[in-house]
Length: 399
Image 1 (tube, helix red, strand yellow):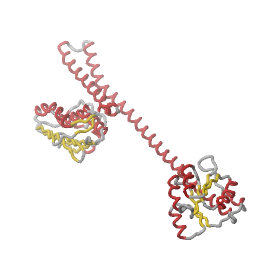
Image 2: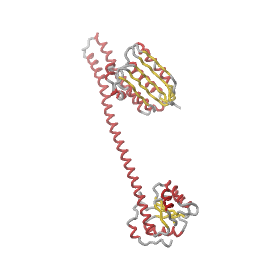
Image 3: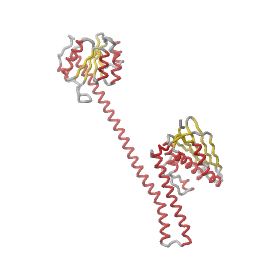
Image 4: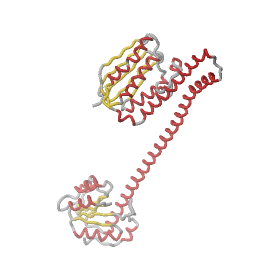
């Protein structure tokens, strides 16, 4: 490689690439069938602090690429066993950030375009000087350094964004936990205060014997409210945890509905409510049977409770497009537009619901939502104040 020499090293020194991502000197692979080119490249580059390896054929070069790590590859266009351009693709598949420089003795515009399209960073025309080689290599390695640095900074930025999201989520959960604990304490305090007042009134003799039975009955009602609240809290906690996953099995929603519905039928008929259960299909879902019973029970119970005499309650079960679809529709008090999403908030009860049933936990619909979404489904509500509501849930059908 007579034209390749080592003059002008000082001019290239300022362009020498710094350590790339790691504290290692850059590694360079020269793939050329001319021994003079390989030796000349080694003589020109090794004094610059680069680690230089060589290969005389395309297959040998490909093997070295697959077995090692290189920052820059110099590859001749014409090799004994293949075209050098055809090596670019497997080289870049191994490491997309490797800088590839094509060496050619037949430089043409067409060849340059083809090399660039194949992923080459630059090309050198034979014969070339040591200065040109060192400058091209230094520029290529600087480009790789900048690419890796940009990628590193992008990753840091993504990690920072992810940490910020995680921090915001933790703060939200902490606020939710505080609010939840405060609400639970508030909900427990009212019936406990009433219960304590009843018992103290009896113990201190403020209640005559003939009235104590009535007071004890009211105390028992308050105890039942506490038990209902604790029971709903336990169900909600179970639905939010993963403990129920092992209880999931193929479940017929129709079978569960047919067991649950009769529990509310008598109450509905006693209040003069028209009652209908329409089982149009018998879809099977992978679910916890107890939780599916809770879904039906809570939706039907609300429909009956908040529908006045002379109203209607209809329960529908069908299957469509791989989804089990359950709906409970009533002609009851309905829900105002601003309350439709809030009814799924824990402890929230609409003013109309509080007016009809002053005592309630406000956990029924949040429990239903948690169960349905925990089983990969969703629940929606359509309602008009004073005209009724329709709650519809969807669950994926079991294969």
